[in-house]
Image (cartoon, rainbow, N blue to C red; front, side, top):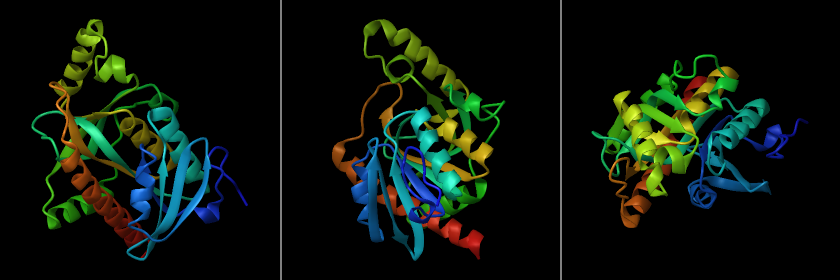
Length: 250
């Protein structure tokens, strides 16, 4: 049976739908919401759990940070048979989005280099509208603050998104300003590449994040609120992804 090169998993160990997260510690917290979760062997620091949610098999994998490794994880899972994906986590936000809002990707602005390896027009693709509709409906039912719009994705965090040194402030302001002028509600390091990889691989994909850092002031959402929102994010994402997968299988 086929085995993934980096993840090391077999096709019978992963589900038809998968949640992709950056922080490996989130895998334990997601597993706590699953029925009969099974932790798979860790390869290259990539943590994976497969279990059930609302009676539907689902896999969650942590990729760390950045578009190249995130697309490696997606590509390998797609090769094993996974056909629907959702990247969940945190993101910078632009007004009118506010701290603690749930940010749902519709379109993308690619400032990263990975997308060009998958598509010829990196800004032309969109997130899966059917999956987005399920997310939006469930968020409304749960009375969660959801904003839908454009995600801007960058490669170099300390050169494009957050000026660690004073001399990079002008560059960062320019990059984020360009994203905002294009209508971005969120900025991260993975979404546009994952949208494009999913398009090339024939998979469904969307990105759902909590807005935790103001892109201009760099004010950060407080830890207590972030923890509460994270639990809501996990339930919303798992519920929407498994519901959409179940609908497609019906």
